[in-house]
Length: 359
Ligand SMILES: Nc1nc2c(ncn2[C@@H]2O[C@H](COP(=O)(O)OP(=O)(O)OP(=O)(O)O)[C@@H](O)[C@H]2O)c(=O)[nH]1
Image 1: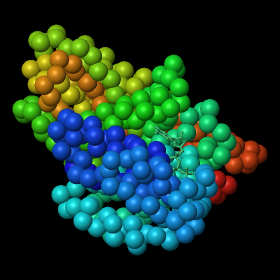
Image 2 (image 1 turned 90 degrees about the horizontal axis):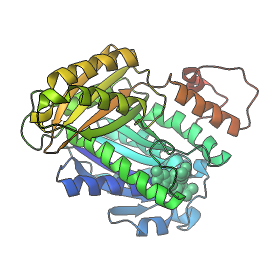
Image 3 (image 1 turned 45 degrees about the vertical axis):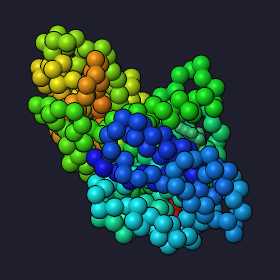
Image 4 (image 1 turned 90 degrees about the vertical axis):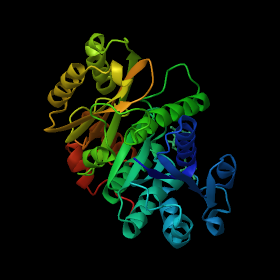
């Protein structure tokens, strides 16, 4: 799937750059362009991709310090300038635009939903979010910011692919090392998904197409991505169990949003050398995914790659009802100091006016 990436805020810029770099290093050509917008000059100076500083008159290049309402206001006030910069970068060859941001801060948290709304007004292609949720250890302001932002982003974008900062980190990493390593994992996993729609080497029996990604995200809401890989035998017949086990791992332990299993739609991509992909394994894995997600719409396809490993990518669309999203919305609401409301489902939490949205 050919995409244009727009990073908003510090995390957004770094992740957009990491994804563009991964795509370039592998020669996939799925990333057609990457651009970063921020209110903090110093964050932009660390990036190699093209950048734009906004809000200079308000915050003088120093960022918004976690104030996501200010982040949203600045993006709204400078929407025309930002859209002018994007004109020509968002080309007609792109299948979709991804607005990338960490939702716990200010610039990305407030600016990304606002930018998604502007992009949707102007372009006909899908506008997706790639959003990072703060880890459990981050402070209340991060949780509250992210809750409001996620609610608004999900409404404005065609779908928001969510990555929990706790999901793909390992325990022995420091925060700084942690971010770099998490960003690399995001780049590899999301990068492979985007590249999956672009045939690179050889033709598999049932190669996945970008329209399958778009259809999986079609109903909107929150999406998640699972990933796992394993060494594969040269003989496809020996890889039936490896494929089913890898798909299970991708959904159950390798997902960007832990414990989000129930979904409206799903896509299973098996990446690997076409000679090593066992059709029986793929069919079994797909059946299992149908049962596990409770979805009646599970798509599947191969991503031919010359590798000794087999990888499974599981994209889930419509995971708002999951326990994980519910937990997060509860956490965000608590952080917003509104603890007394009765229990409700995560779906209702998106409708609930007690956790204000941003605009
Ligand atoms: N995965 C990942 N998360 C990050 C990274 N940097 C920051 N975050 C997360 O993103 C949130 C903070 O967002 P930032 O992007 O730093 O903030 P910002 O959007 O630039 O906003 P201001 O700094 O308030 O202007 C926090 O929840 C962090 O956990 C990163 O490099 N990778």
